[in-house]
Amino acid sequence: MAHSVDLPDEAACLAMLADLGAPPRLVRHGRLVLEAAEMLLVTVERLGVEVNTRLVRAGALLHDAGKSVHVAELDGPGARHEEAGQELLLRHGAPAEVARCCVSHARWRLMECSLEELLVALADALWKGVRRADLEEKVVAVVAGGLGRSGWDVFVEMDSRFEEIADGGRERLGRSG
Image (cartoon, rainbow, N blue to C red; front, side, top):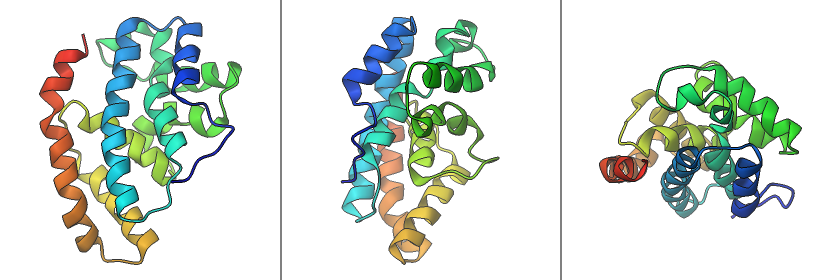
């Protein structure tokens, strides 16, 4: 279980959201994405993959921080919150790798992403029951490559977890307010 002491823990992330004036619904969203991320982390760690769990947790909680200023994007489409969130977090002292999750969770197809960033992006889809085959395949490929195993072997182990998380999406959506 890899940790980096300079990364914010859950309490620090929640305090940062409060400092940003994040609406309660945005905080709930971060917590629900964190639930999905925790389930992914259990599986990844069980497979023996080195992963910075603290980065995944902070990224899950803070990835939509920009919606505290682009509030319309809480209910509607838009990407203005992505770069705004990164800038806000950097101004509030968040480490760059955490702030980057504000952009990478939505633009993972267009940028080189760490496993941690991909897990945040995947948790942000699965929490509400959405399966994204291309993202799941990318996560599986990174995990398989890190383990020196075939993608298929890793997929078989990870797909059931993806399905389990997605299956809980309706219930989590009901709690999202």
